[in-house]
Image 1 (tube, helix red, strand yellow):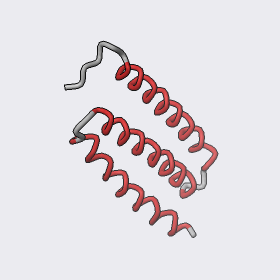
Image 2 (cartoon, one colour; image 1 turned 45 degrees about the vertical axis):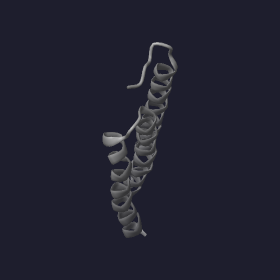
Image 3 (cartoon, helix red, strand yellow; image 1 turned 120 degrees about the horizontal axis):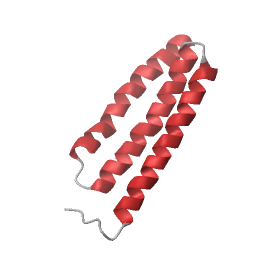
Image 4 (cartoon, helix red, strand yellow; image 1 turned 90 degrees about the vertical axis):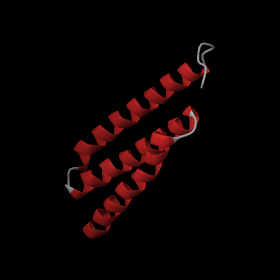
Length: 90
């Protein structure tokens, strides 16, 4: 069972690279924001899997919760900035 989680972590790390391309070369800011949220969600799952592999899930859950809160607040801040009348996408 441990090898399954190890392989899942490796596959998830590779899957994180797919939205990274959209963050770097996205045509619009909205594409980049969506890709950043996808990366954050997959990273939360990856941190939880690593916690399970190290048999210390209770410590890693705290890290995942903090990361999720920071990702959510960051998305709200970017969305507020984009919706402001001063923002003009080029």
